[in-house]
Structure formats: structure tokens, C-alpha cells
Figure 1: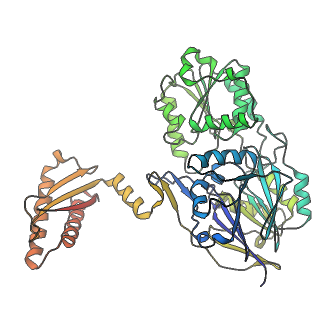
Figure 2: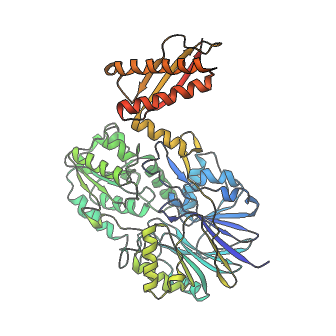
Figure 3: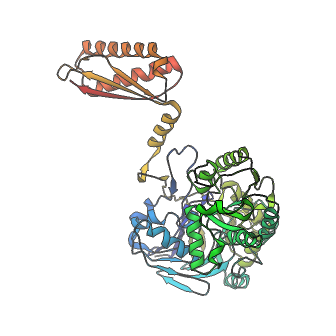
Length: 554
């Protein structure tokens, strides 16, 4: 049988989040990353969106391992939901920081797998695949690129990265090793493309220390900073500057507290215990002697920032003189929530610094055109696939690659579920696809929420609900008394009594007319009344509430 390699994205094309890639030969499968996505605005009541792994469920015996590139949630966050569906015995490989975050996350679900730590210099052989790892810089410690040796050639999987020459933590990207790998002949480069529209090189993370210095020096009250909770180097810089200015550190939000605890345990950071004080002691210090590091930089409902802005955290109020700094990128789809939060902070009288008014308040962890072009130059791939961005970023990446000497047919812009296939001769022209859908997670479970449920939630939120109770004779199926109509979120009953009386009379007429024409059962009665009320309320109000009909036999 001719050797082949399939690369299938179950999440990671055309979206910034929900990264999950499948590498498949005739005998073996490995998975790279397993991330969550954020719900879109119309996904009412949905907490998370995870990759659809239907394709993998009947191929479990082929899956050899999951490899994680780094510890951001859009690369690791779906593991608690997906690992139990595949196998709790499935080997998981992760770099040090990601390993600690994953173990903590899985423990909350009562899952305690054996996660093996990987780092630069380590080689892992699983089935048809042999992997080695390259240390790169990102906005989170211990980020790795994967060089995947396959039966048909070498794949370089470059998830999130930038070429930071002076990182706050750890060593710079190992460009020498990347060049060595490129010298062996790279069949295909899968590359981060999120900042492919931005010229030049992404600035180094260390520049944030100067920004924090300026903002804290000019803050007469509490200094409040929010960023991605796993961005330890960003938090470290805020802590270092605050301590120099004699400020105590207060952590707000479970995720930020947990990540500081893990970073301390792993010795990424080290501070005297007296540098931190619990939030209940905040009133023992003057406002100018306090820095608060707060989770919820994306405006998440119920986060530390959300509760603080709403005044729901005891003893901590945002007041005039305070300064709130949003040191983060906006994840696409979260802009409205973030801007609403900023507006509410201004209403409380505090000052706010965010990227729209101070561009250097955040430094991206993703490479710009200079970084991306240099990776192309170092790896010299035959084919390129942009990943981890929206469609416009993928198109911009293709233009950048063409500018760097590649032919358009060498750059593959894909959709999730589209199969990329290689054999020993190169790219195979295929139109094969894998059917994937949206798998949504809410408080009730995983995958229980489908499009019908979302439609119902949208109707409930926009149009309200009408419940009609019909008392009927069990044997004759005739009305035994007046129908009862209950409205929630549709109309105020006391101000619309005439409308409800007319609706009741209409129900009685519909049932009576049909009863005279023949036998009436519960199912038909329910359908007749529902259809009548939907049309009646739309004609009278222009609105379409959800109509439920309950039949009580008497």
C-alpha cells in the first residue's frame, strides 16, 4: 500500500481558537493540541465550544498520543471534555508549564492521567511518527514547535510564536535548531498567521515593564491590571514594578490565583510572602500602596473584573483616582463585552488604559510579517499552511509567502474538516472532507446544546414565552372550563387583558370547530392551538413568542 499522510483540522482554520490537528497515516494517528473556543454572541447560555471529534471516535485504536504545543486554553482547554471520549489511558505529552496547567484543569474533573513532559532535545517515537521539539518564544512559558517526521516527509508544526530576542522568561527561540531542521528538507510548514497583516517584527515582551513603570508612577490610587491569566511573564513585570513602588499585590480571580501559585511552585517566579496580601485586608493600606492583578481581561461574565466593576467584591470598589490597565489583545467576538466593561469603569470615575488609546499597553505573543517570513526562510518548506487565524489572516499569510518567493499553489488555505493529503511524491489533489459541527458546552453537559436549542433560547430572549393550559374532558376531548394563558417576557398581562380574552375565545372556537368535524386527540389539539396562537399573536403584536400548550385531562 502506498504511504500517505493526512492532515485534518478539527479546529484551527479560519478561527483564532479551538485548535486541534489530526495527523493520520494508514496505521497511526497523533493529535496536536486540543483547545476550546469562545461562544459567539448568538450562542445563548453556552459556556465553551470544543472541537467535534466524531471523525476520531471510530478510529480510537489508531490514536497513539496527544501532543500539546503550549498552555493557552485555545490549545489545551478541551482536554477535560475530549480525553474521556477517546481514552483516559491515551498518552499526553506537554511542555512543563502546559503540563502543570493541564494537570490542574483535569484534576477539577476527577481526571488524573499520566502526562509526560517534553522539552527541546527530547525525541518521541509513536507508531509512524517521530517527533522532536523546538523551544520558541510566545506570551507564555515553555512554548514548543513540533518537527514531525512522517513516512512521506517532515512536517514543521508552528503553533503560536514570535521571534523575541530578549524574553522575560527563558531563552530566545532556537533559530539555529530551526535552520538545522529546515536543512533536512521540510515537506510542509503549518504556521501561526494571526498577525500576518502587520508589517515588521513583533516587539519583545520586556517592553511592557517600561509601560507599567509609567502607568504606576502616574497612578494616585489603586493600580488595577488585567491580562490573560496564564501570561506569567506579563504578571511578573507588573509585580516587579509594583514592588519597586512600594505597592502590595492583591490577586483577584481564581485563575490568576491558581496560575501564580503554579508559577511559584515551578520556580518561574519567586517573591517574599509579604509581597502579597489577601483581598480582605485591602482597607489596611492606602489606595496608592496597592496593585490588584485581576482575571477577566476578555470581559467574561462572572470573572474577577466583571464582579469588581459590578461592585460585587466585598471591600473592593473602583473609585476616582484608580487606574485600570487592560494589557491584552481582544479575542475576536469579545469586543462588545470588553468595551461595555471599559464604559462601566469610566462611569465609576477611574482612568482606563487599553490598546485603542495606548498601543504599547499590550505586546502580542504572535509573530508579525517579519517573524513569519523569517520562519519561512529558516524552514524552506515545499508547502505552507496558515493556521490559528481568521480567514483574512490566512489570505494575508498567502500574500506574504508569495512576496517571499513562493508560488500561490504552494500555499494551502483550508477550512476545518478539509483533508490535506501527501504521499511520497508530494501533495495529493483531493476534495475529501470530514464532516464536523459545533459542539457546545453549557452547565448541563457536552454536546447537549444544538441549533434547535440555540434557536429556542434566542426566541425566549427576544420574544418571550406563552404557556397555554387547556383543561379537557378525558373521554370527549372537549374543553372543561376556560383556557389559562401565562406570559413571560412577551406582554404584561394586566395591561393586555382584552388581547388575552380574544385569544381564549379563539382557542375555544378552533377546538369546537374541529371537534364538530371529527375525533380530536391530544396531539392534534396541541398542534391546532399552538398554530392558532402563533399566528394570532404575530398578527396582533408583530412578535413571535414561543408557544407551549399543556393539556390537563379532567
